[in-house]
Length: 116
Image (tube, rainbow, N blue to C red; front, side):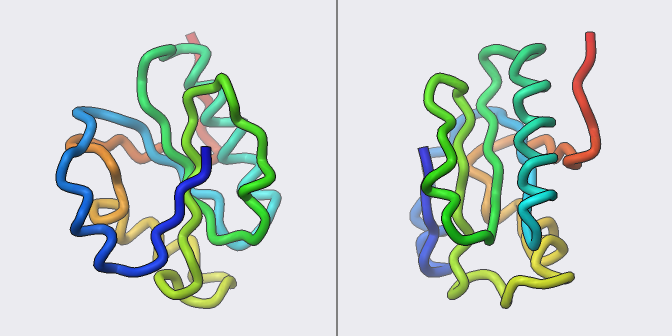
């Protein structure tokens, strides 16, 4: 499932938040998105019920197939995020409290893998 936040005011409309969830960021490069998705899938294997959200500013993420994984891919639209580049990831990471659909969020960097 892909969601998109086209304007900053949409963040404030999200008042009903899930209790807890994990956040990943895959911005600026498809390599970072791939790493974030691999890390999210590794976490899913360890925590089957934990909601997981991956944020990305990359075009075409609506074509990423995540059905059955319980992972939500959120498009951070260009109107919300700065132009793609070196600072897009930092922009998203410093605004995770606003972007998060969860009351309590755990940010997991894309180079971290959950292991048993």
